[in-house]
Image 1 (spheres, rainbow, N blue to C red):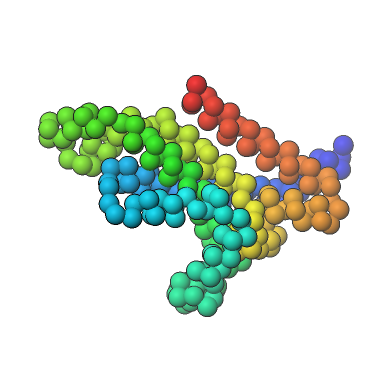
Image 2 (tube, rainbow, N blue to C red):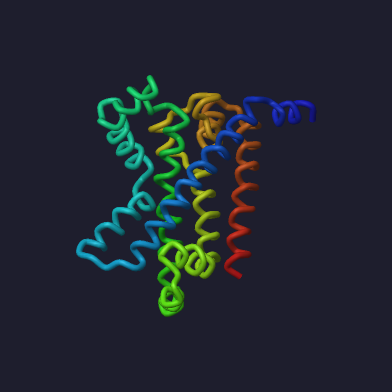
Length: 226
């Protein structure tokens, strides 16, 4: 019992959980903002190549995590323009940092928020929005006072699903951010390393912790849908 309690209170156990929640929270905020805006825009616009754009936005949902990780390394690695700019600004490469874990989680969680937002805004009766415009409301007020409240149910579901997806991200994070204890080691990567090194007690504790958090997230989604 004392050994179990020591494991639960140890820095080795707690840090990956706190880091996972931090990464998932930051990436979710980014995803919520971008996903909502892009979903709103594409739900109302028709243009040549729209299907191609939407397919590209949804790709991270179906691509193998190793492919997503590879592409992130190509785009943000030290040999890329973005990677060199980041290193020049912050005096360190973006790979194998907390920023890299946030980027990886953002990329894989974005499709869920985008799809939820697009479906939500597509289901709104445009006559309601047009009526608000006729009454003098500008586009910003229509969006914040009419569109967002009407789409709130699906938007909240998208937020929760995006957070859960970011929390559970493994493959792209491992390739792009690595598994540095105290820096980039999230719960999924910690479980992998713990199993590989035979630390099954720690692995089980992390599995139970992330299962509880994920269950709560999904339960909240089901409550919102019912």
